[in-house]
Image (cartoon, rainbow, N blue to C red; front, top):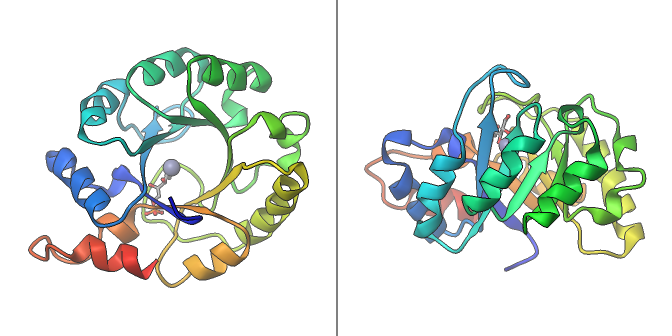
Length: 220
Ligand code: DX5
Ligand code: ZN
C-alpha cells in the first residue's frame, strides 16, 4: 500500500447496489472501505450496522474502516469486530472511558482510532495517543455526506502530525469530510495520509461511465 490511502465512504454509494459499488471503487484504485455508522442519537442521522458489514466482508480483503458515530459506543464494538471490521474509530464524547474503549477495540482484534469533531479539543489524545493506530480529524460536523470542508481542520492536522511524528510510531492520520480532488493536495501537505471521500468518489460522473471512479481516484 502506498503512503497515501483513499477511503471512499459508502455513505454516498447507491445502497440498492452496494456490493457492486464497493467492488467497483476498489477495482478503480481505492484502498479502504470507510463505513459510517450513525445512530440518530449521537448524530442526527441513521445508517447501517454490523449486518451490512458482515454482508460486504466476503467481497474483499481490503480494510473495512468502521467510523462509529454512536453513543454509547462500547456495546456495539464486539459486534463490528465479529462482522469483519479491521479498524474501528470512535468519538471521545461517545465514550465514558476512552482508555477502556481503546482497549476493548484491541481486545476484539481490531485497530483502534479516535475521532475529533471540528470543535473537539485535541487534549483527549493526552495519555492515549501511543495506544492508537489512527487519529481521525473531522473536517465537517458528523452526520451527513456532501458538506463543505472546514478549513480550520488544516491547523488541527498540522498539530496532530507533529504529535504523531514525536511518538516515532506508525499512527495513521485520517481526514473525513468535504475532501475533493481540488483540496486533497493541500490537506496532504497539512499531514493527512488517509483520505475519506464520500460524495467526491461515489458522486463522480454518470452511471453509464464505467471509468467514473477510476478517473476521480486517479486525480486524488
Ligand atoms: C460524515 C461522515 C463522512 C462523510 C463524508 O459524518 O463521517 O464519512 O460521509 O462525505 P463527504 O466526502 O461527502 O463529505
Ligand atoms: Zn466517516
